[in-house]
Length: 192
Image (tube, rainbow, N blue to C red):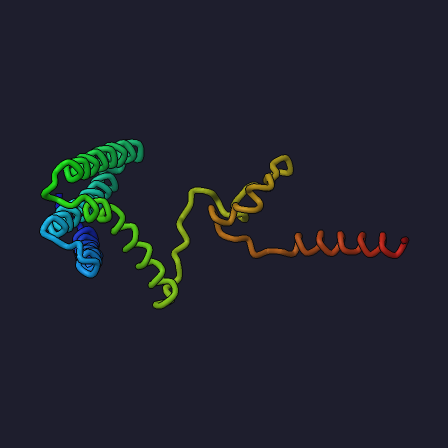
């Protein structure tokens, strides 16, 4: 299996980003006068653990996509998640036990990828103004659905259905019913 260029690029990006987060944490320890070699070792262990977890996750996603079978891909991803989380938990327990490695940089490194991904998405959305991609969904669009009179959407589907399919921009039926309701309200006000 050949390593996908996207996996390589994203892993390098994550490695650099997690390194920056680790350096910032090291600087925080230094500013508060608590820095020593154990914090440095914790930062190194945390960086390796975090980047290794991200790389293995990316590699397993690539393998799952290449297998083609959806059920098998889900099983592979679940097994990968279980093994990766167990390994990270084991590393964190070891750092709690050993006095030679400070545990805080290791535990903090678990959260760095999520922080980096969130900051990156916000940067792309608000600074670079890159529109969010609308995820493709197996739910058919409203104009593709059959026009059965027996099938009615429940209130939940009406309220949140646009997250699963394209937003229906044909509001003529809704406007007609709303104007009919408004006319009925005006009629009632006129009677009183």
